[in-house]
Length: 168
Ligand SMILES: CC(C)(COP(=O)(O)OP(=O)(O)OC[C@H]1O[C@@H](n2cnc3c(N)ncnc32)[C@H](O)[C@@H]1OP(=O)(O)O)[C@@H](O)C(=O)NCCC(=O)NCCS
Image (cartoon, rainbow, N blue to C red):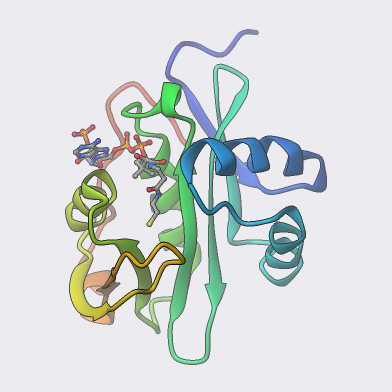
C-alpha cells in the first residue's frame, strides 16, 4: 500500500540510513557533521537518533545525546523540499516522549537561524544563553532550553492534522 502524501513515519536510525542522513546534512548545513560522527552518535544513542520518512523518502533526522546534566539536541534537519510538512515536529515530539522528564533538553542554534528559532520557541524552548563565536565561521549561538517544568506541563506540540506518527 502506498503512503499517502504528507504521511510521516519515524523510526530509529539504522546503519543503512547513513548515506541519506549525510545527504540531508550536506544540504542543510555549511559545516556538516562527518559520517563517522553520526555513527558514534548512533552507537551512543540507539533510541534517540531518529529518522523520518515522507512519501517513502528519508526526509529528516534528529538526534539527542545524554549529557551529564541535561539531554542535548545535537541536530535536527529536514531536506529543503520536505519542509513545512511537520517532519521536524514529529521527530521532536517523538524524541521528547522517549526521554524521562528528569532533565532539561538543551541545544545551540545559530543566532540568525530564524526558522529553527521559531520552531524551538513554538515547542517551549527558551533562550538561556549566548555562546559568542560558537561556529567555525564566527557566528554566535543562542543556547535554548526546555526545562523540566516546561517538559512536565507539555503535552507536546500537536502534529498537523492528517499526519501520523508511526514508530517501527
Ligand atoms: C528548522 C527545521 C528543522 C524545521 O523543519 P520542518 O520539518 O520544516 O518543520 P515543521 O514543518 O515540523 O514545522 C513545525 C513548526 O515550526 C515552525 N517553523 C518551521 N519552519 C519555519 C519557518 N521556515 N519559518 C517560521 N516558522 C517555522 C512553525 O511554527 C511550524 O509550524 P507550522 O508549519 O504549523 O507553522 C528545518 O527548517 C531545517 O531543517 N532547517 C535547516 C537545518 C537547521 O537549521 N536545523 C536546526 C539546527 S539548530
